[in-house]
Length: 364
Image (cartoon, rainbow, N blue to C red; front, side):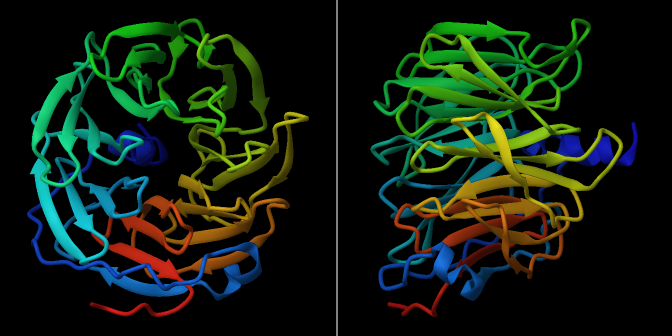
């Protein structure tokens, strides 16, 4: 296996190659109440507001998730989840996943529970209290690895993506969010050929809940009608694995990110017009594979994180590069805007969680 594939597997779903060490329980997070919103007009002025450093952790922090009410930030490590209260800037709790391997984390629409996909054999989700971290339930059934999932707008259904990178088909399922019962399933859609089928690395549901985008190992982004699961379109342009997808808030644009070619570590990303289903522009600038992508609150800014250690901001309409945010000293594994658009969080393999915005915010 060449170096790119080894690193790529590490990117996917915060995978098995990452080794985590102990984490101190002492960081704080900056308040966001008085900060201006990040938009296209001021994206060039975004700067680092705070950095929570964990230099002793190798490949320490992975994906991020803000609670929909903006009060809590979750960060995923290889074998545990950490929750911070944003108002008090205190670490609420950290808890370990039962199997020792976490792949994805997300809050329920009401912000009361946190779901974590775990394990590499059984397809299941831990349901946790979003404040205490207490385990409330474990849902799911069958075999495979859940690499990505999302709630539908009602919060009653889960869209599940996964499979194994090697040797098993990608699968797209709809679950009952309370019981884990499989309501619908599509298999073998991200296939290069019948004998070589790759997992679904990321998925996103459109803001109106009517369309689903998936990213996979066949160099395509696929669009599906939801909830019936019929394939609507295939967006072609990527030349390597596609690691992430994100809809604009109005549902008219889609951003997709990954790596160029299967033997090349260069980053590759596109901004798509979903009316024409054609690329508006490539997002050119990252020197290595791009791991994560997010739109800001009004859709005018796209944030991306990369193996090159930078976060980059792009115009959400044209794809123009607006700003390059430096500070991480290793792969940026996650990027996420908070719901009101005042903060951008980034997580990295250097063990740091960084908060970006437009002005220094007061501490309590």
